[in-house]
Length: 109
Image (cartoon, rainbow, N blue to C red; front, side, top):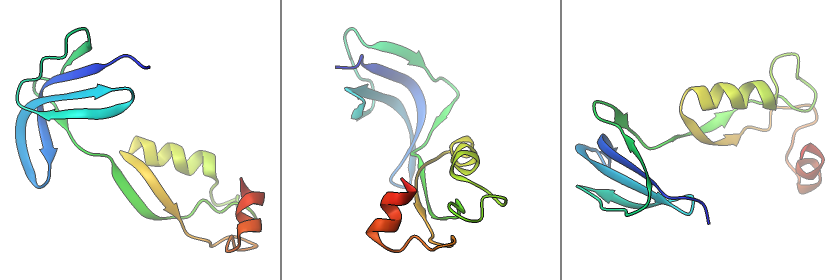
């Protein structure tokens, strides 16, 4: 079990609205979002004046592995994605050879 984290007083962006409130993370997952949350022994992070937004999904990344790593690779592009708030991605198979079969995907892993 991982420790709980309570983020308090944040401007929460969720479902097209901005509200002020708290967010509780328990066992590595968002457990509650809303007004004022009492979370007992959780570590508290005061986010007064800060905005808390969901992570973004990039549905068209080009990691270029294998075959075209002189343009980019998984290490450089995933770090760039994280820096921009991207938490998930879907890679496009524009590599040489293209990663379009299970065998090619397993080789890439």
